Length: 242
Ligand SMILES: [Fe+2]
Image (cartoon, helix red, strand yellow):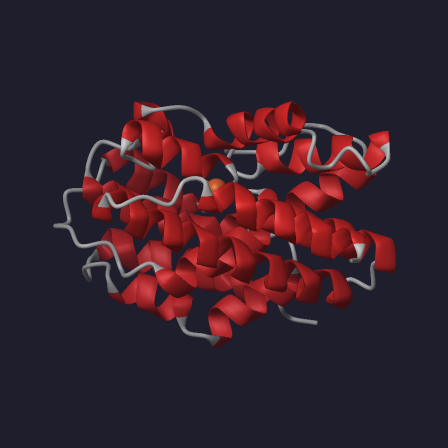
């Protein structure tokens, strides 16, 4: 068995320990199991695009597989994926990796890179880090967002937006979850993710697959949203002009 195969085997066994007759939990376990595999695949593609070494591609795949490892414990213990109502699933994910020792055969530097990427994948920003740690944190954040855009249905909500978020989006940039007051605001957060895509490969794919248009179509048509749409389109055109 290759190193990767035995890590995959470990993960599968780990997830199976959370399998349950509880339908609500089981559905969510399977959702995250499939999500983790798809994100791992995207990580390999992205690592290839960025011409990373074979070892780095291996590491990218491992991070994809493990980035949501804490989701299984989270939904089992709290019946939710909302971090604010349970625990920070990035931080706890890194703790689970350390506790179980599943990656102990990786070098110390590699284990540190995985722990950093898993911890940071769900944070608002990537804090200062070594170039290697920063690279992998950026990879997982892109791969994760891409899969979320692909699988999550558009947010169903009215247009009760927080004025602060509307004003920020008119200028452009990432929005903070702490400013979210309504379900509608989550739609704005999702849109603001387009300002938080690290690699042009991911950004182009998101646009080509229609995810930007879908997000923009969900907004009402008024003076504010016309500015918001123009700002994000200008930003993306600038990023992808080469
Ligand atoms: Fe996550």
